[in-house]
Length: 158
Image (spheres, rainbow, N blue to C red):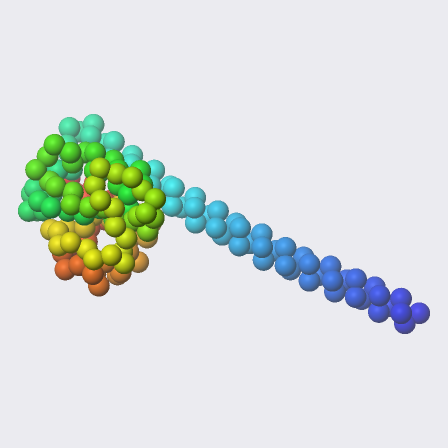
């Protein structure tokens, strides 16, 4: 009889432990998915603002020229970074280089470096990874002495 009780209790303890483990894994996956969802919503809203700026006949080069930024670097060379690079082609604003965690695997019209590389002096660094701006700004401020600006802020100031 005691073996039966111990067996049932062991089974229940195992089931409870398994449920807790599944709950933690599921909770982690939900948290990761929520973070990705938030990131993509932020990017969508930023790109939507960019469309509004373009519909008003404005361009981002005017922001840089007005602030005396003739030579910039772009941090984050995915969609938003490439779009910014494309918009600044043919203007008086020179994009000296891009900065990205995946520097070795990105092909672009400008050199792409990583944060660990030596960063050539520029007038400003524009961060396109708006979700992680604060953390990127902290790391960049240790490497450069120029302004570090969020692309999102630029889009609302143009």
